Length: 458
Image 1: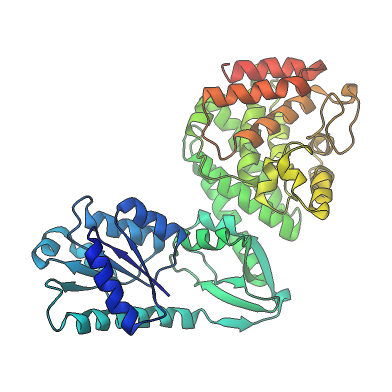
Image 2: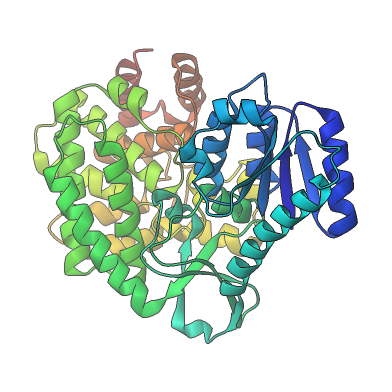
């Protein structure tokens, strides 16, 4: 287990470490001096069982730091050290009462009973953590009763309606999140940095979860104003749920309803704001992956369609739906950033992953065939990585086989992949447009490239 010790006094670091090492030889004490070091340690060195926070900090408000740590990592015991009078002035009741085992141990530290006091308070905090770990013990299970969900999806929530498990072995799962209990995103970050891509819930619970979340997304999207900036997060959540539902159960009535509602919202939002620059300025670029690239592709395609002068609402919805389905069969979010078989990311994939990636336009097109009211979307999706110079994939048709709507969609998805998760600046957009010139400035693609340039104000 680990403890995070925060103090600007290096002598205190050495003193506390020496005390704890004698009583708790297996306990790792991570000591930091600044707020920046504190948050970095909370993100990368945790999880921590207990925080030891010096209330005498001069360079930063210790109360604000304590609240930030709790918000980032979740509630855990804090032992406050320092001067009693400074503690009373700077630490609020809200922070001190944030955990039932929060405690304090004041100067002078050389008094006879200090060592016994700090050890007792530490034992109380560690006992609480051990009880939490006991509740999250490893279970021998039948893996067929559980279903994986991308770990990124859990960043959309502060609490989850079902118990969440991590796979330890093929038949051993450990519960890491209790149902309806707030959890810190730093917990997910810790697992993600260990290259864990999926967490698990029980199959019957997943189906209920997807159905419930679909209803919530439909209600939220139907009630939100078209021009509201909050629509981006609502759409990202809806797309994530829709893609999970489709992969788990196929194209059900619920999936159809959600796809229709999401595409309607996309078309309505662009009509309401009227400018791609507005969307790129307000888009939440902290969230990236398949769902995010889908949404960015849709908005870029909508902007091109409006600029070209396409008036058909069906055509605009067709572009939005193609955007939602294009990468649905990709197994990892990072794959949605690949736009070329010559990229270093693609070359670093295993042969099996390369083959799956090369075939993903075809497998995604198969899903789209169930949306029979929208003609040709299977061809648009199957061709979304094709280029007019026959250097794309998977089929490399002649340029004459790629229609103008293919050109719009292919250019939109290329730009979306490039900007997803990035800080979007005019210089960055200019570099993307310039990098596309060699492969895209042919036939109908050339005309769309001019429209893109105008939309990006380059």
